[in-house]
Length: 161
Picture (cartoon, rainbow, N blue to C red):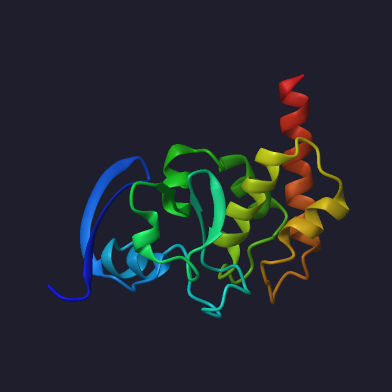
């Protein structure tokens, strides 16, 4: 087949091999080929953060990365992180603080928040705002999102003590 490539990766803990168009974006592969629709296509230019997924432990924009670039990588989506319970505390806090409203940005926002909490044990509100600044939300005004992330950071720090 011309213009196609076969990739193998670990997707949400499972080995996956697929043949797909060589220029298919990672987010399109996840949504269209794998049926994982949690990552959204917002701007398709890497600006809004709706397509954020985790590749080899780092938060990346799925619209800016070709699926071929994920060959051999470990990819985690919101579905996988939800299934493992890895972000259950963040999801609960987002719900309690009404930080989800329409929900379009929530998967990318949750992955970005998890990325921050993996890097900084107890970020202050300014650090939280800075880290999520690449994820657009039209509904919440960000205050509830910052509150939820801050609460989880504090709880995780107390739990680790």
